[in-house]
Length: 317
Image (tube, rainbow, N blue to C red; front, side):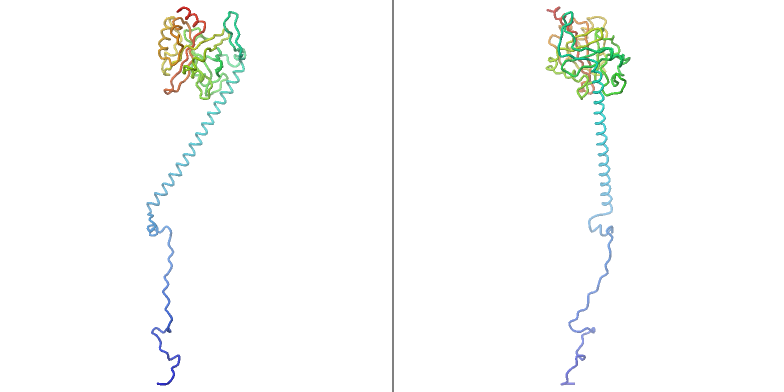
């Protein structure tokens, strides 16, 4: 009715039954948990099933290669350690055998006026260790100071000591076809390893350099009956399959001299008067070792008895 006050309850109402100024709440969407491995999610991240498998394979290959590398390093370390141990064992044997020889720095004269060997060898002691001993080779100012053995073949002493153990360097030995104790045949052959540790015939290998060759005037070869003062004549290389390099016996002195002249033509270091000396020779001692230049080639040092060299030079004056 006009003029009458309206009650609060009589105020106009908005449709929907809510009062003025009250907003309707927004609908709540349900939360859906996503699996990280969901293909749809991986697709959004740019990763397909094939790509993930490829990544796993690469990781597997990397792990395998790492494991193989570690194994190879361990094997290499083991081989290196074994090699060091072998060199040590070789040194122990060489030192023990060297105790049977007393080397003097002083050089004296023999009864015939020739130089006396600066080495005094205990032959009885050496024979007690191994009866195959036939001589002793000594080169002043080098490590070459070894007994020489002769077996029934050229294989045993390549890797066996005088005491029978297997070693890397074996022993210095004479060709089994030579007549013991040496310097009886036209050519006496001695063999020794060229060890990277510097032992055995490594020092003789260095005579390939003319300067070193010229600085090595004397090599001693001793037997129980006699001592020989030798002089280096020349060094030459050959292949391991050169069977003529170890020829020991010749039908005549001329055949030996022809043979030596053929070898002299291949020399890498030599005396300037080598051809003159060869013209009067009857015996040489050749020391053979590896050179490692062309696979497993051989380096051979040909030595001549000093007395024969002097006689040959005197005959050609």
